[in-house]
Amino acid sequence: MKLIKNYIYYTLYQVISLIVPLILNPYITRVLTKDAIGIYSYVNSITQIIIIIGLLGL
Image 1 (cartoon, rainbow, N blue to C red):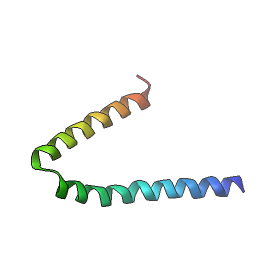
Image 2 (image 1 turned 30 degrees about the vertical axis):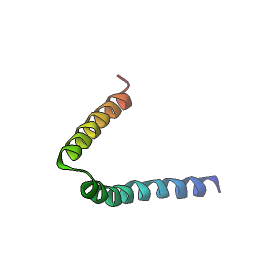
Image 3 (image 1 turned 120 degrees about the vertical axis):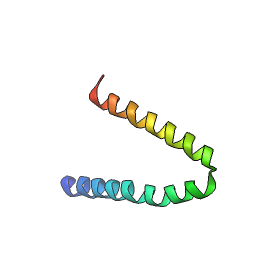
């Protein structure tokens, strides 16, 4: 039973991880200006680099 419960949670997490950017990105591009989108992209890139380094344990 615990295995099925964990499988359902993991599947929901994966689906939400795919759907949220599909909804959020078009909204962000409509609301923000060109400069703000550039800043958003820059901050997002830096955040992703920090996450990758953190996952490597450095």
